[in-house]
Image (cartoon, rainbow, N blue to C red; front, side, top):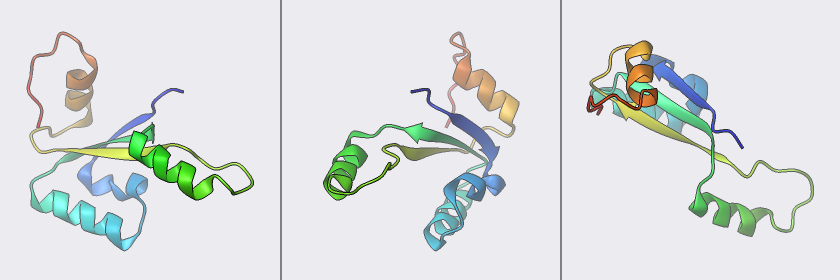
Length: 97
């Protein structure tokens, strides 16, 4: 399974986080801490999530999505291209926070 990654300014985070009160809180909290960019892994496989998934859906019928999402917030990157260059260039030595 290919890990799908989206890189967006923090103002667009709700596109991937959803519109729940919790998602809005996370966005506001990250912005208050100085986050400027968010990287969202939309098809992330997490061991703890899989255990909960197995326990909850093991007796259910029908297909269920066994992956989750994961968000990373960055404060010292101001544009998508800069973050992509630092994340995907193996020779990059810049520290991103």
